[in-house]
Structures are given as structure tokens and as C-alpha cells.
Length: 274
Ligand code: AMP
Image (cartoon, rainbow, N blue to C red; front, side, top):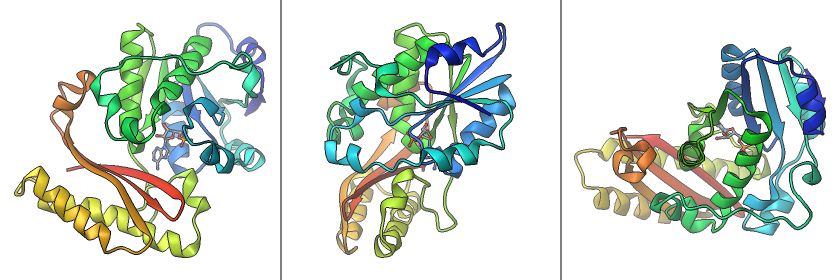
């Protein structure tokens, strides 16, 4: 494992002609990230793992400030991978002074759910991923289904900009009690962590009701149940047929349930296939 904070230096270290995989992360690495890195290592000659908390995708500046950062621990966790190169840039390696997000139009699906509740978030994500794809021109790039809307967004981005990188979606890795792993889980108190177990229970209840009940009936049931959970604020619960949801998923006929909530001050998202 080698680490670089300059993309120019990193690029010099990669021999020509290799199959390169990219795993973009914001660090505070957990088993979810590791599963992406393992898959990338099994499918590429070299894997670049970026660790960068991208400021332009945070619509809430307090959230950006408290986002967990553990670069030394992250590097220790990555030490076991022999074929990876870690990219740990500072802002000025990627952004010009005062540079903001680029404005994109990816269609209606980006104004729903995360797009609706985090205005500007997807423009920030697309801005950083476009930069990383253009700098490293990876053959493959790996993203988690945990952030399903983001995965569809990146696929749309590569199609719209004619970028020659294959976007690979990877299964959500969960804790033993079903909570989707997330860097934000570390920010919760023990009590909040107990409450977080309810997220997967709500999603599984939706799965139980589908397809016997109508979407609106399932949504009502989940909204009602969530009201009875202490210290739990539902932001949205949605059921989406992917074929109707976005152009890039129009051949995918699966239906998924999506949830976002706040437990105390911590915002968590999850989704499952119904
Ligand atoms: P983040 O560091 O949260 O930006 O995540 C970096 C990548 O890891 C994104 O593609 C996420 O979707 C993915 N990821 C985060 N949590 C998980 C998880 N529990 N299982 C699988 N992938 C994940």
C-alpha cells in the first residue's frame, strides 16, 4: 500500500496499460468500504482508494464539520492490501480557490428523496466524481447500493459525459443487527445506536407487506410505526419501481424501499429490494 496526497505524483507511480479500479470514499473506513475495495482488487491490476471529505456535497456545513475523520486509522486498515494506492488529497489538489459545484441536469430522479432533502448534494457528488474519473480514467469504479440514488446518479453521469468507466454497484454490508454500516454510525450514543436498529425493521415490515398492499398503504404503515419510536424522526419513506424511477434504470424492474431518518442529530439512510 502506498499513499499520495498529490494526484500528479500518484499518476506517475502507475505503469501504463494496467487495468485500474477506483473506490471513492470519505474515509472513517468500515467493512462496507472494505467490501468495495476487495471486489475492486479482485477485478483490477491496481486499485486507487480515495479518502476525501468532499466539501461541495455537504449542504449542511455543521454536518461537514462533524463528519468523522480518522486518516491514520484508515491507513492502518488499508495496509493489508498490497495492490492499492491511497489518494488523500487536500482541497487544493482538486478544487481551485472558491470553486463551487458544477450544475448538472440528470433528470427528475435527482429532485426526489436525497435530492429533495439535501439540496445541492448531488451536484457536489457529481462534481467530485467527474474530477476523479477525469484525473484517474479508471476502467472500473465501485459504489455501494447503500447510497442507491448516488449509484444511479454516477451511472447517469458517465453516460451523459461519455466517460469510459464501468460503474459497479456493490451490496450493502450490515452490522449483525441489520443496521447498514456507515461512517456516521460512530457518531451515535449507545441509546441512539439502539434506536438505529429500528431502521431495518421498518424496511423489513415494508418487504413483508409488498406486493399484497398498495404503496400508499405501506407508506402509511411505516409512517405510523416510525411515530411510535422515541428520538426517531422520519425524513422520508418511499417505494420506487426502478424502471420508472430513472432513465439509467429503465430496464431494471425491481422495486425498492428507501428510508432517511434522523436519530438525535445523526442522519441515516438505507434501502432494500422488496
Ligand atoms: P462514503 O465514505 O460514505 O462516501 O462511502 C464510500 C462508498 O462506500 C460509497 O460508494 C458508499 O455507497 C459505499 N458504502 C458505504 N457504506 C456501505 C455499506 N454499508 N455497504 C456497502 N457499501 C457502502
